Image (cartoon, rainbow, N blue to C red; front, side, top):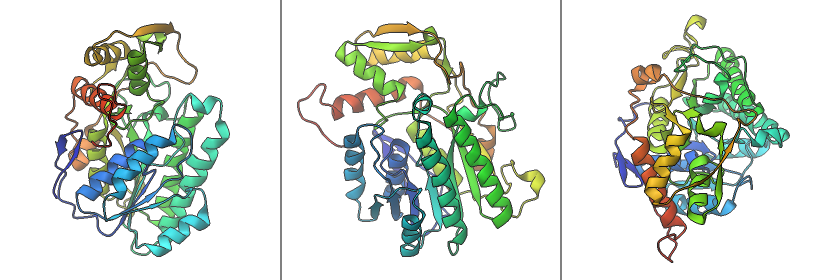
Amino acid sequence: MTSFSIANKSYNPPIFNNVSGPVLVTGAAGFIGFHAAKALLDLGFEVIGVDNMNPYYDVQIKNDRTKILEAYSGYTLYREDISHIDGMKAIFEKHPVTSIIHLAAQAGVRYSLTHPFSYLKSNIDGFLTLLECARHQKNFKHMVYASSSSVYGMNTRMPFTEEDPVELPMSLYAATKRANELMAQSYAHLYKIPLTGLRFFTVYGPWGRPDMAAFKFVKAIHEGTPIDVYNHGNMARDYTFVGDTVMGILGALNTPANPDAASSQKTSSQGKHPVFNLGNNRLETLSYFIEVLEKHMGKSAIKNMLPMQPGDVPQTAADITRAQKAFDYAPTTSINDGLRLFVEWYKDYYGVESPKRVYSL
């Protein structure tokens, strides 16, 4: 196949001339990891998935995503924790992995306020394990890993560019993601490993996490319970549909970093450790986000207006020029279409308008 689809929306990635052999996807039972793994399988790649299936949120949805992936003959899942070095080494010894999409992480800004140590194990120890496995892997080609727009902290200049300072994270989650970028830079410099970081901007879509805004809001609207609206709805985000994010991931994977580039090029699109923004290139307010969900649900939300939550930032907006130039990244999904596809999936998955629960995209 030369295309993949998400919620019946079709995507046509470029020809992969820099990706071969099995691709390891960490966090393969997670939201973005599931979609990335499925896209690769649809495109004919062998995929080695790694996920510890932790109970941060309902494991049932992870199991249901996994059922879809395991229907492909080219998929193998290891229920392993990426911070377990011996277990991860065994996977690399068994499979000739030359490319990695590293998406496993302890997610959530607010959760980091109450469960800080889980971020150290997954986001720091786990990332170090992947770097060590990559540097010892024969014929290794490229690792693309997930960073986050949260690294920009309280930067006020919009939109955020990759050259902006990122020394003032506002949460532990953001600090661990910035630490990942620094760790990757050191490994690219020391061991000449092709590594690329992707700063995701508020990804949403079908099969999303239950702790994410779209999921929580739709559930509350359906059940007639209040939703918490922080900063009285005046927050704004660069909401990015998951299909556009996956296209960015695949484009980056097919555009390996150059570990032999000069140090002065370390953040350029051709440098030894490039970092790219993956956003939608359009800023939307939280209030408008809720309005669109109300429209597609056909029902008004009960809003509980609250002040800004500790660790949050008022706005995030992405300058995607660098990704556009490097691998033709071009998001195509409007917030209206993306949220419509999410609502349709939610109703289907939970049987909101039908008594039968189905597992499909």
